[in-house]
Every structure is written in structure tokens, then in C-alpha cells.
Figure 1: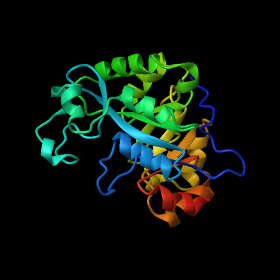
Figure 2: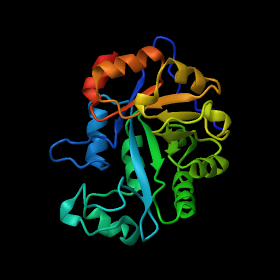
Figure 3: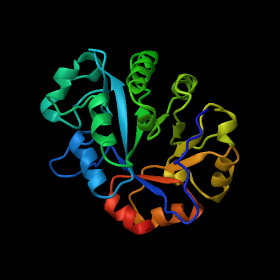
Length: 245
């Protein structure tokens, strides 16, 4: 199991701020694109959160939905699993390789890579993701952590990428304590509405990292910060950073 060094919030520190899909809802900038990640970091994010799935030509690409209907209506007929990386690039969808190169060039920036579970072949995605991350140096790998809503994917990634943190995502109340049921994960990504003092204590029983999603209200950010969460994933980096600084 990875140590997850650097993910825990230190004494006196504010929670780390992660730009959700880079930025969302920003005029002229599509989520999960290189400009979206650059802008989030320019706005002061400590890192970015992104989503990955496998395309037809075998590359890991950065895209939340199975298709482009929502984010790029002009390319609505493109389905990630059926399109090549070149076809997706025409719609601004980057490969994970391109994204890693761009974001890791920014000093200290961290990347949360979410492996999507609604894919045709989860095992193939895991294999391709492992191969992609395997091309990185040790220092670069140390700035990346992984997550998924799928416990199977979390276990598969953790079993192979032993030096990289894996955190389980969930949006519904789990049976607590969570980490006893997921021994290969070092932490959790709960929906922010699931976090209170009792759940924090339960999540901490295994010593796990706690990053909340998706936190866009400054008052909610302050509540979560006071409870001790380690990170906040947000669509509004400037507002949430200001709220907890």
C-alpha cells in the first residue's frame, strides 16, 4: 500500500484545493482539457482532478462522459470507446500522457486521476492506465493519486501500482468504517454532504485521507475545513481557496 505522502493535511494547513475537471462552466473553456487544467492552476489550485477512460485506438483519454454530447455538441456523435485518440483530439479531448506532461510541468501540482467505472472493459482501462503511469519517473508518480467509484478498479490499481495512493469515491452513505472493507485504499473521496463529525471519525479509523467533492459553497468549505478534511474538490477554485485561507 502506498504511503500517500503529501496528501494528508498538516497541522495549521488549510485543505488542499483541487480543480474539478480543471474548471467547469467557464466561458470558452471545456472541462477536462489542457486549458481547463492550466486555468485551475493559475487560479491557485494545488492540483487538478480529472477523469479517464479508454479510446478505440488504445490510449487513455481524459473525458468524464462516455460521449461528447454534453461537453462538445458539435462532436456529439463521438463515443470515446469507439473513437480514436486523433478523432477525440479534434474535439479538444487530450490523452492522459499529454495531460500529465502539461500539469506535471507546473511545480508542485498534483493530479487526481479518476478511473471511470462505466466503461466497456474496466480491466483494459486498468491495464492501459498502469502502462501510462509506468512511463513516469518516481518523482512524477509521487504527485499523482488515483480514485474510482468501483471498488474492483481500486483494488486492481492498488495491487499493481503499489507506490501510488488509491482512494475510493462514493456518493451514497457507505457502511462504516469504510477502509476495513477496502484494505488496498488509503483513503476516501466522499460526497461533501456525507461528511460530519461522526463520519470523519469513522473514516479516520484506518488513518485514511479524506477529500470531499464537489464543494462550491464557501460556507460549506469552511465547515469541512473545520472538521479536518484533507482536500476539497471544487468547480470554483478562487472562492473556495479564499474561504479556507
